[in-house]
View (cartoon, rainbow, N blue to C red):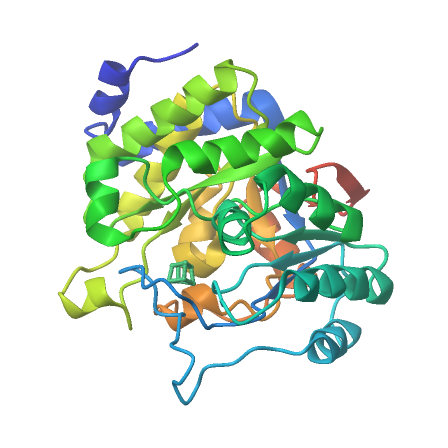
Length: 344
Ligand code: SF4
């Protein structure tokens, strides 16, 4: 049953166990006791970025001593030596004005050659927006050329928090309407996507609910989001952290995940991104409406550079153990959330 914004506001004050019970019931209605994961490699091709989002500890100026841009050969070598047989190659990077559009096309073609079985999920809406502006190309042409070179999906990242007053305090990048427009262009091409929500920084709970309301409305209008990925703000090495803004507590993370599940009756999947949420909180979150824990996340950098204290890779066997240990049934999936094999 759909709940109103007023009802959602009241959920924050529910006892934690009751909130978990409500979210778990909503999750089980859709997915039973199954929890999914994917074998995925997280590539960050360059950390050079023209922007300086206040929650980001990953970006560098081009002349910083630890600025980097991987060559296509270096990317190929990383994927060749992946510790898992990959189902997905996920890719997001800084907005580096020195790179040519052809570099990205060549990159996609090479990845397809190296791991032909994997779906390439690359370039957030923020990066697509940057390509269109920086290379003076219509956004539709950017998308068509990337798909022709091998792009299969785009990642969810870049939604942050949709409230403009909050966004003006934390970044100047792609605004909500543009983010949603770009995702809709993929949906119209039959390519579903997911959507993030960065929380626990300078926003309030009510901004999170408005963010969820925007997503629910978008879905009602034919949107193709498959998953919501609430991302817990990381509080190291970034300008907000330097001002003393601390990240959300485990309880706040669990409440946010649970309310996302209860409120979003038209988004199938709720994901806990274990790198940000933490391994233990992610395991507990399976009782708070979460049905997907992303995956192996080989070499994730962005959250770690902003303070995530989690590992930079979890094997698929370890992920299965987490899921079983929490009392659920592990299920490997592909980039479209289709089941690949039965592990239970
Ligand atoms: S979040 Fe992305 S766009 Fe913003 S500074 Fe970091 S790398 Fe650049």
